[in-house]
Image 1 (cartoon, rainbow, N blue to C red):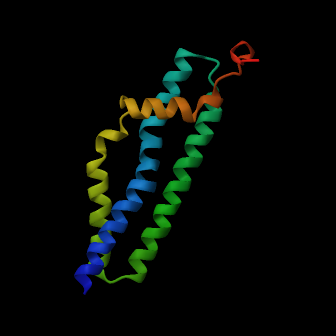
Image 2: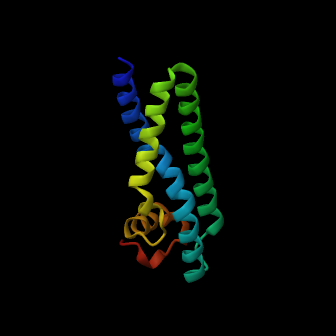
Length: 127
């Protein structure tokens, strides 16, 4: 029965890492360099606002990962914990290329997610 629980824990670890943990890593490894690059190309880009959001996203995701992992470690048997970590590592290895600031998806996500860091252009509004 522990094998099935271990497989279920691997699925949970994979899902959690894909949904939360990778978000923290992508935010840290991709969004920081993209924010600096956007600020260099457009000095009006509010770098401090972007940094605050990046740090808030990173810490929130990291704290969720730490909390859930601590629960898994303390509340489950060893084999289930190993399955959980296996799922997390599998998700990380599967998405390693996604953490690059050169990834087109990251660049598009950054542009839409941090659009409010650009100064408001009244001529761009359509009245």
